[in-house]
Image 1: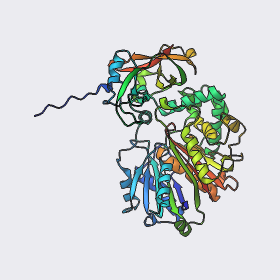
Image 2: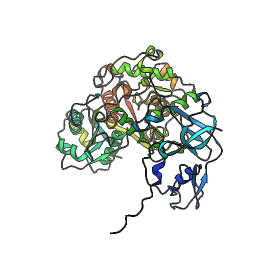
Image 3: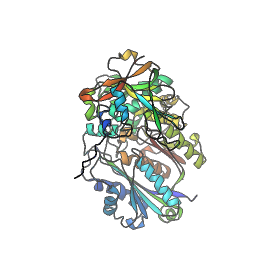
Image 4: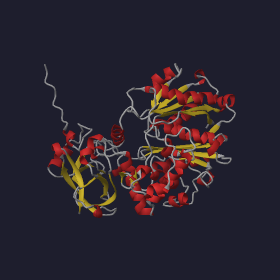
Length: 144
Length: 388
């Protein structure tokens, strides 16, 4: 009897609940564990992708370098959720948000300690890896 | 390009909980549309079944419905684009007829949302976004539209009261629509009272009153070529222009957060094909899943300049007596939003308006009507222009 091949489902660790177990961008999780939020850039045409992709749809190849999301972006918009989907109830209250870094944007949540008065469209914020219960990981936006 | 018409329309009452199965629900919209067209199932050349998946347990509903509705052995298949599924069904039917492949196509939209709980339903809607990169943050549809509302308020000075005015308009007509799920009056005073249910927070800045309700319902349109239309219908309503577009599901790849690019692009295509502009539209149905969605639709469709949507509603221009009546059947806010059936319901209202058969909500002598039907938070958009 052959041994079942090991399944690389590192992507299960992303978010309060991950709906995707396996991805060719599984290394994203290793980077999160090291405190880094990473995108990918196509080696052939230079296109940047956030969220990171394994494949470039412009030149139809799959040769990517990783780059780090660093520095500050501007808050594009946000919303404080009054209630949540079933699996996310324990996370309430939380605020989903979008940050603009110019060449790319990052969708995530505002960090739990940021006072509401600081959450304004145009605010400068940075992206930081965040530990969730049960060993899960995501990223949040903190004041820059 | 050959002429294509809608010659039959129907819809069930939209209700909180339909006391029957999905095939029985589909029958309601279908039988009304077929009787409206004066047809029997053998007169239908193909069918398209439209809904959002996972609300009920029937995998591949098309075959089951074709059997139940007497539509075998004609070709049938399932079409989905979230909340714009049945207007996508119309686009497919248009193509099947215009190509000459079929003389008549039945488009059946349905949704039975009551078999799952409200929170399971929110969970499903959160997975109507990018499940790998965004859903893990606990997204849901009202929260996405709320981000647009936040940006629209910041950029254009739109206020929560402007959004409340849209809900008040919707309830005016919900009270006149026997097929609507929400038929009670809604006043501005209710929004001013923090204890009132309408003010309950959903996702800032959207409140309970800014959101449409889930509902169970079905709708049906019979689409036909000119020859078939002439044989069966005294008042065919012609498809003059039809446009569609998509945009990135991920908000991270978007640039516009005060309007929906899919609506602008689909609208542009439809206006160009029909050879008309926003000022030529006599009556419109837009996708008001949330009040902010109607506000943005005014601007995206050119009924108001960028950021001026609030002036339109403040001046009551989108009421039945106004310069551009919008959602005078109550819209999604009052009818409810049985996802797959909604597009067909919007189209039915416009068809009845153009035929002069809209009763209490009849707009005086409309020549040209428009339907704007959006899937998810503007992932998909269909804009269709109809004429007499």
